[in-house]
Image 1 (cartoon, each protein chain N blue to C red):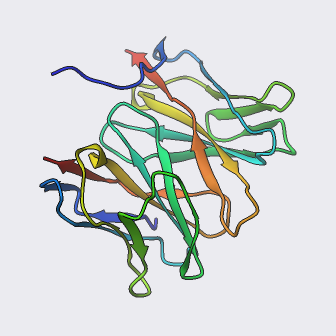
Image 2 (cartoon, rainbow over the protein chains, first blue to last red):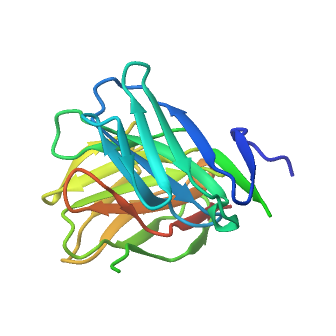
Image 3 (cartoon, one colour):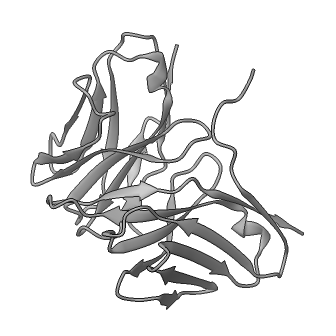
Length: 115
Length: 112
């Protein structure tokens, strides 16, 4: 049958190369951002986060960069491995004045790592 | 490492039937959420829950939907009369504060 849905941007990289996944967010009032990894059939898995008072944060093999001026977020993965193949979503934590925040997810980017 | 768990992993139901999706959040978390993801699309917020009440809900979360925390460990999403367009993956998430939300593996709901 016909599949319906968004056409995901795809990034194809060679194993061992560095990957850069980009995301534009919508709300200039968002103060917290998260990158999630989603493998097929599974839930979003937390990778790294960053607050709006920072412009860079590093984790193990991953770095997130935040440019508030242009509302842009990027995820850099060093020495990409086949196990990194997944869909990557950025999410902005949107404050609205209530007791909780809600996450607004981006469209997602499919990372395909070629061995 | 503590994880959010969800049951069932796959639920098939007839249109018009009621379904209850179950979640066990991480034990020391205080904030609970439901999201859904229609096949091939992005994850969408449905509802957030804190201090035994709904904190925010999206326009998707209409009168057919309800949430409950019936005891100290479970968090449920009920759809009273399912429609075909309710077919999706439903994710539960929890957080200790208003920051990082941790997601469960999801329940795939198929409405026939």
